[in-house]
Length: 572
Ligand code: FES
Image (cartoon, helix red, strand yellow):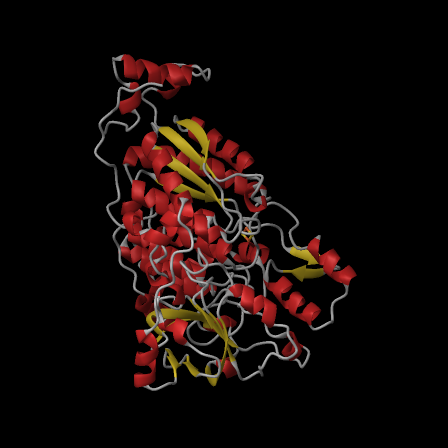
């Protein structure tokens, strides 16, 4: 099969001359790049992204492998999305990064791509982009950072900080302790080391078949991270020759495998949105009901924070994703092809679990029943999600009086007021945190418990919003309510004092007012006027889909592959 890069380099005209001359200006001879698979190393390294800070070194290891296998590596950068430093939220830019990845590959003489990711949104953005481009690709995750450690206590990214922040708001954590924690939580490069969104998404990249087996959970600073990168560099050259493309690997069955692995990991609710978006790029529909259906019959076996006890280092030492896949095999499509060229069943044939407290057998799950549920009701006609494994059992069937915040700033101003009319049985409601309302659907969904209740020992309440929450968060938190308030969803008509009923067992979320009353309120419920009129924000508000459709841009769904190619003879 002719290499894609031959369109650039194997031409006997002025255009071919210029393409070859461009690489020769970097000091390469045609022997290096002509007739060899050209491998793009798509790097999300950035000094603005601490989680991905080691990816330049990982790229060097990939290059070793590519050279060794007879390929020609070329590293390039895209935008990077840092969860902790981007405002208002990295999610606002996930689709922009996906476009960056797709179009960089499309525009350049690349036969295949190795994708270097880590921090939350970088993994789905790369998978979305490469699904749309559909050239051979392997994901090399950067891996989790070292476990947090403070005074000989383990500290989990996000999860332990949310807990300590509540204690501090209750007046129980000193300035000194708080300052020490700041220096102890993130001890190395690498992504968050709980089963937050980053660990979930890299694990799901593996479950989808897009990484070498075992790649997801190797710690960022472990030498085996670099060995994995080198092996991935070798393998991408073979993948190009075999013409195994993302659409051959990320099939409908592969997405079902990923949803089951998500459930088994007790993974992030954000993965629901990302999987829908990645599948959407390949024209594969993933309704919320599919997540609910598969979660009901998949035991949660990974005992990792925030739903469990341990951290990602222990998960890796216990056997990582391959051990989870092996344990789940009777529930999976084990014959699905992966980028190793083998099936999942073949990949994990000799895999063992080395710690059954961390990765449990199916017969002894971490929690009984589903880890996640998709809800419906008159408050969420197109659905909502709740992470059952991180919610309080006593609140999963609950009716309470709504305490409504029209937007995030109002919530921040009011939540700690001593005169806020709230008790532990109330339902906290946050509007306008969705894809359009945020904009970008920020992680505002874990609404803080009012401090006057914290001081009385209350640590969880029913909370609902059209927003997301961090994968490291926890609580009885209903998320992703769709359609969102800002586009005229019924969440927008909830008033203070309205009774709201959550029934996780029945998968229901309802506003308990009469049908006539709800109908009347909806008559005057209008989408909010668009807040931004220029640039990326404007396009985002115009073209973003709702959470139940993956928050992708409508014009990027489906139709993967090359656009018809007509080489241009233009020069600057
Ligand atoms: Fe990057 Fe958590 S902040 S993964």
